[in-house]
Length: 501
Picture 1 (cartoon, one colour):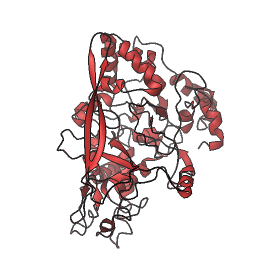
Picture 2 (cartoon, helix red, strand yellow; picture 1 turned 120 degrees about the vertical axis):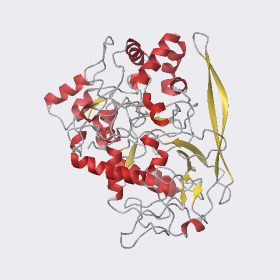
Picture 3 (cartoon, one colour; picture 1 turned 135 degrees about the vertical axis):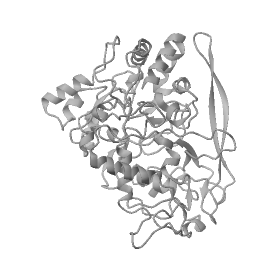
């Protein structure tokens, strides 16, 4: 593990710097040189790179490009691992019911919730979406809530990372639009869109849609006037364990918070407190990299999304606040004979194992001339500066299947200022109101096949990949402007490359 004392040294570098070699303490000198060579950016776009088809190395899933492509285990998972994967899959799909119930192993839903099962948000382990019609309730999207700190205690909690944000006093940290019988739901999410035209070189005009979020039919009185709302769609699940296995030195070596190299890219690490160890560690998961581990992410989702308590988040009433007394007093699903939480061990461990071992499908059409031209443009336009193509995972990863694999996730897992267009105005930990973690791109070309839509970004506002690119601002503005100025054939090649991922 890299200490905070080393952070200033590491983040002074850019790209794959000498810091990478210095802090890959899992490797000997020969392997450090091998890793540095293999992850160096390519300069040859006449053919695909060696092993490029295998997006996750030996862990690449044995998946065909169909609607189940995101639901296969790692290709190198052991026989016993596949058994745990299948058990975790069953729990991931489990539909929870309200307490009390004769189905005692499945009760404890809510009292407030956004979905009845993990699979309801991550349908087929893919990407969620905002409501597709005005009457459709959000099922794979929700709103985060917070307010600015107002007391010295709150400011100290944020500074020490005991908290990453201050929840809204009545409605908590997440807006739940469903509730069990006898408990009022928190309300409804209202989304309206404004058209934003963007003229492209070649005569085409793209109409982007800019969303506005509100809440109505509030079940527990008015919200704080200073509440900050931020939407989140469920991200795809693939490759999470391999992202967790990237050595922290590889991520921190790419950080350049003061833009010391003058390239306009100022990626910053999100440092968070690990809820299990209490240590300050690198955040990797969530749209703002606010969660350090898959286990923590899983426990938070059980609590916030479904209202189910686990050993890591043991409150049986989920996100209910003291201002929601009827919610806190509702029956829960804790069974004394099973322990003090609604999803006791090994439920959390098995769902975490499943989430950690979902494989990444192989690449497609990697030697297609248009794909290769799009890849060249991806590098030329600067996209690869943040969407770093490849890594070799740590030799010290806890799980053998994740160790020392050449993977191609196309992310640096750092925070970047994406400009006012994408800003939610809601700080979370180290992330400002305009910063987002670079989203991994592997599997993005199968979104429509798996999830049945092509809605992208943190709130699904982009209706296709080109719109997603055109929403990039801030540090990504030069790359976006270059895409706008490109010829239609160049834009088509770039999109074709993204579709091959």
